Length: 324
Image (cartoon, rainbow, N blue to C red; front, side):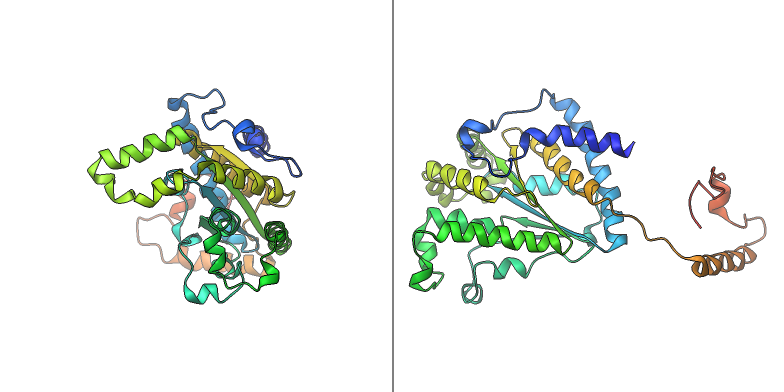
């Protein structure tokens, strides 16, 4: 069953993956309205299944305490990052998931290298870390707005014409280092069309309860649409690697974007295949002794082992087919 699920998910997300070494033209290569032939009512059930699968694998990830997962979410304004996080991670244990959002760098952060503040927020083993915007801002916003680069206090020799290629290389090397140390890097770009962004901005203006989400800066950034499309295309081309590929998720339909994000993360966890720890013979002896003591404490009329009574013995001879 697990193999069938893994193959089905891998097939589903294959069109979203940026092949390492490929040259990306974002507008030509990826359709923001793509939905894989699905209908919205089918999507609701798929998302529930995906969330359930994530919950199962996240529990195993935490119990094994060997691997960590870093999910990087990138999108233009109104791309749906917050909603994706809220829906996709709705079924997991919040103790094992940590979300970091990166705003304008502080004075302390500007006193360090461009990856320093992101390294401070990396997940621990057994955890899933989510970057709501990520280190890729350093080759997107910073590239589109040269004045931001000026505030980073770089020496003149570090600000030459090859700075973006140098940053791509540094990012690829950092992500490879993380992967080799047991931290899987998952990268999703929520690909929104210009017209859908316009519609969502207007909704934020029209609905009083959404006014707080709108900023005049959003309109100014929208005027740089073509610059961002170029920056995204070059970033995807340069940093989709075998160890940390990019997935371009169509974002015009929020329900489909959430299904895709859940599928990409599930694909990663299935590939890691974390397992619950097993105990040795001595520990099993202690478990059996503890069971006997607990059974002896059963009140009159109560089952010695309520769990075993409610779960018939499985083929492996254990209550419910599992356990000690």
